[in-house]
Image 1 (cartoon, one colour):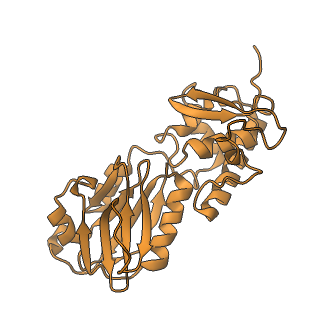
Image 2 (tube, rainbow, N blue to C red):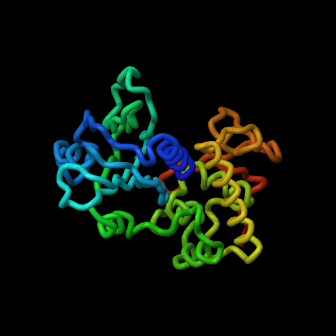
Image 3 (spheres, rainbow, N blue to C red):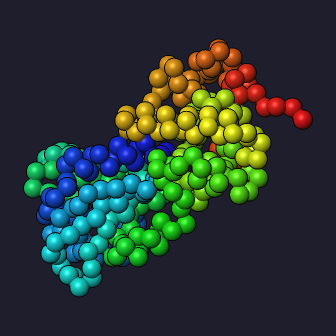
Length: 271
């Protein structure tokens, strides 16, 4: 599913193609992905707007707008996009063939920004003000790419939880998903079922350093890469082995998610 690195890639797509550009029209092919407003009103409020600088908070992408459009008295809406399990944002030429999973399309003079999603688990919110934006983001922790080591530790140790579950909790820290968490814990040599209360200072440093590395490299690629030197490159192999020590990888459901780790590199202390 799209995680922070994927959303950062989608942010770059929007930044490259639509900053300062005017939305000439909007096509809503599936009104169920538009939340809190009718498809007709959604089109009216966005048509004629100019797109501002896109930004990311965790797994949310925010596209602010400005300029004149129908319904001027309704404020300057910010389009908030969540990609659920299968969503993506693509820039396509105006004559590109339609796709059956294109749900909403913003049309510009020389191209289209298409929201494509097969499973439709999330969708789009049209926030009318910064207050509305905060109402949507208010229950989330800080963006994982911006959080400090001290804040990370503080947020994860407020309750005694397993590392995998704590890092996946979007109310603690926003943006990490299954791949980024498993990769981070593997690089930090920490067992996913260790609790947040068990770590010493050096392990917190290792965890934070590993998380920053994974997010930096993955964000540059626009996804968590399946490189041979990464855990992600072997997690789906039938006989996947640790790229560091060649031990057969373990798979287990932890916190409702398939978790992969190396039993040698990420051994759990006894007692």
